[in-house]
Image (cartoon, rainbow, N blue to C red; front, top):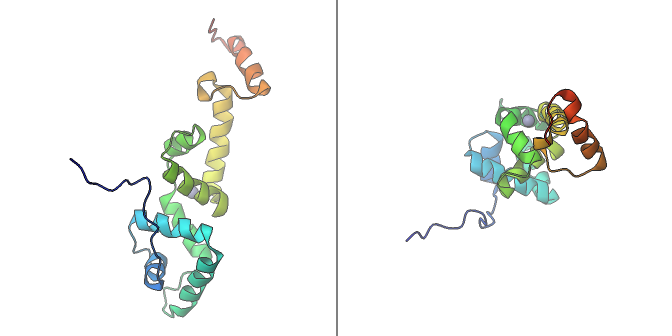
Length: 150
Ligand SMILES: [Zn+2]
């Protein structure tokens, strides 16, 4: 039998300054990095501490917050993952992380990608369960485009 911990309910990690330093240095695993970002989102106190740690790094590789967000672009979700996010088909924790990336970090690349995907999903009946009248109108005009689904 497996005594693996339930990964959907990770124990809250205590994030110390060392961990924040590693986060700034991009030395954490993707999983821990995600945890730190998640904790940062939830805690103004932690964000202040991150800023402290950042200013006390005192080395040439000082990371500005802007640089961190820029680096975060390296971990942008793929288009496919963004599509799954739109369809609510992602692991809730991962979805949370991407929402943070898009809504809090405001990654312009992912925002643009997501807008694009939203426009696409509204144009295909399979894209999304019909939710709005507007969507149904789009669906009912689908046959005009040569795809009669009756
Ligand atoms: Zn991004």
